[in-house]
Image (tube, rainbow, N blue to C red; front, side):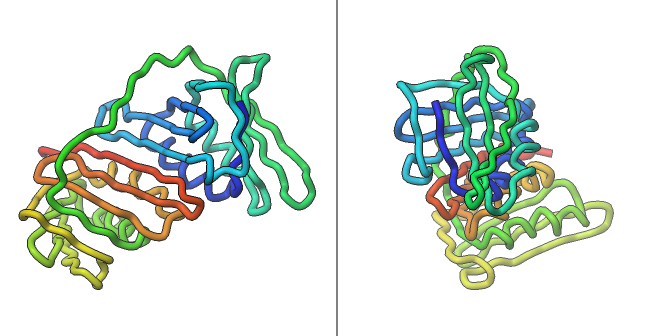
Length: 249
């Protein structure tokens, strides 16, 4: 198995989010796409990365293969990438694990890292199914600002929608935070099937905002006291979905 990702420095935004959620992940590779699954130990967050073959410079595999790997190790390697590097991940047939290669596009110089092989993966993951009643899009930088703003005030962020408006609020120790969002200021769009209100842990939102550095926009969907679905689309067409459970505190 071998696949080549065109911009290693962009990949680090994905690995940062993965490492924040769990230190172990499952990678599934077939001829059509690379999929990475992982769930936080407390079951609060589920992340899914889908990299279609058209987003890669190349992909080679004989059938479907699965690898369990350490996200913190992959993140450390990705951080070593320069803007000229492409990222290659390939099977290491001697160890049964993976090699991660950073290759300079201009000089051809390569740096190869071993990614620790782990026990045979046995996890079965499923994408959550629920009917969202509120959906909106905004710039990735504005979405990242929500967790940063809330950090000054408290630990729980409340999303409350009504026709034409989305209120994002947080409170704690006599402090209050409120951001009233509307289409065009700063939302790109807003769809409200019915008024919805749900609360999410600020730290979980912060981890879910890590891929914002590699994406322009983010698509968010939720329903009252249901998980929130956060969708990033990256420049080469790859996608990352993060589901976070509501907080009932």
